[in-house]
Image (cartoon, rainbow, N blue to C red):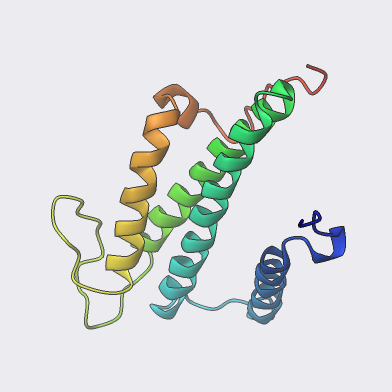
Length: 155
């Protein structure tokens, strides 16, 4: 019989991912007044991967919480939508940063495969995540401003 994991042992990979993000944030912080480079597109690709993975995790947590705790489920569903908005903004920013000299086309073309990594990676991931989002979220929810959270916490 397996016992539930102790709180200290729960989610070691999430803790490691959080530590990795903190480390990355600290390593980028000292750079003042720098010009965005093509290398930063790689950072956004990795961040987009993280956001879409968190998005999927939040979706599962919201589904699990909703029946026994509807208010918590609604808050998690709101976070799920906001996280998708963040991933979409990162994807858009990726395409606005300058590309390296080998890839002149920086736009996302869902009707055809992009030229190669990282565009291939981020665009395919974004397209797949977008299909999943649209199955569960209304267009008006997706277009609600990030500051428009109106779910009462007392419900």
